Image (cartoon, rainbow, N blue to C red; front, side, top):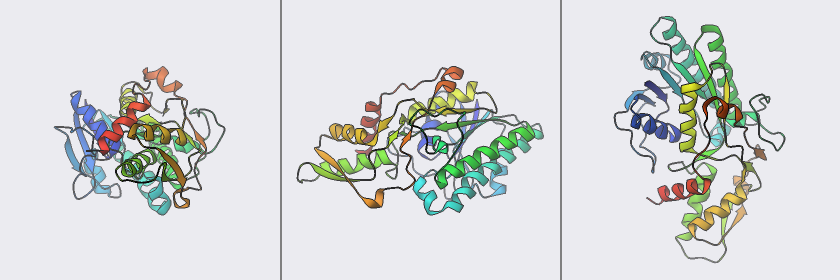
Length: 319
């Protein structure tokens, strides 16, 4: 299969390209101007990956990248950091929503010229559901984003599905819930906690060690990035165009419990100490996804235990 992965040098993109290459697909990956970022620590290489430069704001770049006769396109490129989106909400919309519209329009134009008919998987986020009842969210639930990042992803979904209805482009939307694993940057909460605990363990100090944190009473449906990649491949293979799929486990983990599990794995007696600068006013208290639609369509379910995910994350940070 010939596959284009936008944002191939990001955390999930790097894992996805590795998986595609090792199973024998022909893979093209986009990066921003200046060359691809170094592969995240802990992510195996993807030998044979063919790089393409693309700025989402450039019509010429996007048109050029879209000309390949791909069987599938997995659109990951965009602003992935909620903190960055809060600092620059207009830029988040320009990158995530307008950028997605630009990519989908270019792919639809290629299809209309008879040069390809790729299945396009647009990666959104489970955060689009916003605040709500403490139950697994289903795809039928209304989107009610409460952050610039989530709102811009709703915009991306709307743009993508509008292009599909108008042009016949085969588009599927994935809403992944929180995920982590080897190679994740420390601006994301689990990787940040792991890094702070490792740093504390490496120097002498009183016991228990106090570790700066934000709110720890929130619950998230955390997945391993490698399981997320397998979900995306399952959707590409069997997803129904025009449909949205949660990528979730259905199980919630409180940040308090994750902190305790990480501390035990690091081997340190530690306690969280809330730092006001790390508290986000838009935090959602409980965000867990219902995976039934995805499981029914593809048979996918998570395979990697959360403790293994945390251990692999710590091992990657240590090298």
